[in-house]
Length: 179
Image (cartoon, rainbow, N blue to C red; front, side):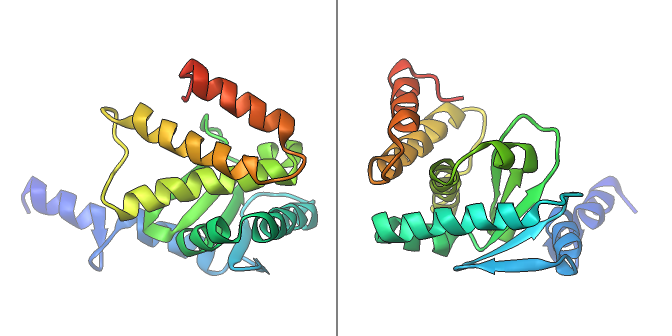
């Protein structure tokens, strides 16, 4: 077997990327809770899953009441929310292959529903850009993050009680500090 065939066999399982297969095997049997249009799965040793689910429910209700068009776009883009303890530097990530958002447990413990709604809007923007064929790579990463942050600001402008977070995001956008 040559190297390219070996790489192809390692990276693809049954015609699907290996990461897709592994992710789906991981979440296949995980207990899930339905929150509006989202399935929420906790893959961490979290004893406070009810409060996490309640935060997502509150954020979903807030978005649905204050910005129903954006809520429908988010619900179309993100189908699965995974709460997980991982050590990467991001508070949340969008995974296009699973239409899933992965959010760190430690971040979720510290934030409010408005923050969760803004993160949902941000990550759904990544998903919409992916759907349009605009893949994030090092050459355009800053531009993509600026688009996502701008969408976050537009979302926060419609949410009551998001004043301080909104101002922080606007300041980051004005400074060009999007990473």
